[in-house]
Image (tube, rainbow, N blue to C red; front, side):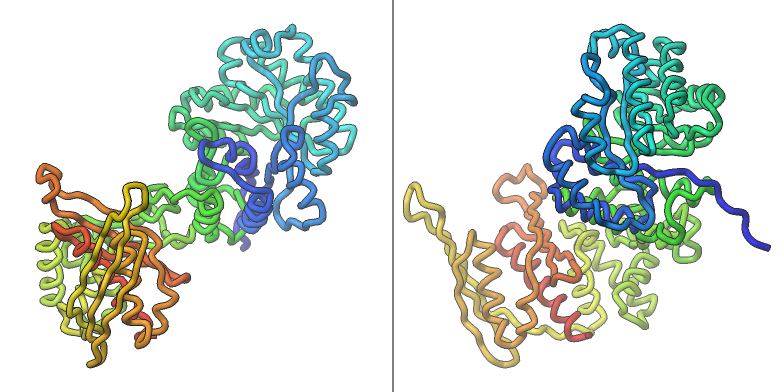
Length: 529
């Protein structure tokens, strides 16, 4: 017997238009095409490419995708109803929407009398004419038409009869989807649910009801999901919740909730596993650090730190996980800290493929970890240092080089010139002594370059290892310049990344510890391969 077919909720992604209005977010035309390709793989129903009447970059996007074949998504062009003082066929915005050749056109119209009076400064009846003319004309040009009722929830609470008249006008004139917009983002989820239920009963059943929520009250996801419960079958949002002010409804939370918890089909079958990679890809092109605490797709979404939690998860993940992280392309992470128990260590050791560890060895590792964290070390973001430390405690560590000494010189030669930094490193590698020196942009960079220079002759693979991030944290600030310093370094070989940590009253020494762990971990990994 075949499984019952899931009911469809159409996902309308507006990352490329509404999302790009977020502070600090900017996409090139090439970025927009790449994101559209990833969204199509994910399997959303609509990709809003931008507003062709607003800027050349958006029009360039539509030109670039005209010949592209999208397997799952339809490209939508966004714009407004015609201007009050212009015939619809002569309106520049309407003309450019058609010139985009997008198969779907989304136009917004005013549904709140405040905007009709104060922004457009026209009569309510004239606004109705704008909606009617614009919808009818675009439908006559064989476009699938989506009508966004801007500020609808505020408009409905102000004057429900007029707000509903705007919707009815769009429906009568051919709109196939009506979208209720919480443009200010201040509507409570309960009000969104109540009003959606009223609207669903008022508009023709053949017309799809949609919702577009902003996150100014941090209710955009909740409002969107409640709208679906009340009959909406079209949700607009953005990847990672990008958008103006506090952002838009986050599709990275909405899509798995629909698919895994509410029993709807939201994206192409089998593509949910691409959700995390899509989230990370969009962050990378936006040049933003991914939010590790983001539900479903963030690094911390399935991270466990408390010993009791880890112990339970090791027996049955359902004890502290609401779903299997692999379904959205994420993974479980076990953190080691002073809150850890032996279960944390055992699971962490298994992650690092250090097999055959006994309970006593796990206890030794845990004891050492807690002692070191008490001194200021932190291993949550320092997997590389944890691996090196575990190998030492398990007596499986053989140093790949031994430090004989280092010296760092920082000199200010001229009042206007930058400081000059030079480092000298002396190490013993495979019974041979290497003495190298290097200049750098600051003392830590010079030390890093000098150490690599000493090791490259023996370990040429280190050439691929780069420092990706460097963080300094002052511990116990009341001690002033004598305070302990914790250094966290993130390194990468172009394929994977790892973190290492060092702690000392001396910034250079703390950095040296983290640098050594980084290179040793890299060499251990290469040796294992």
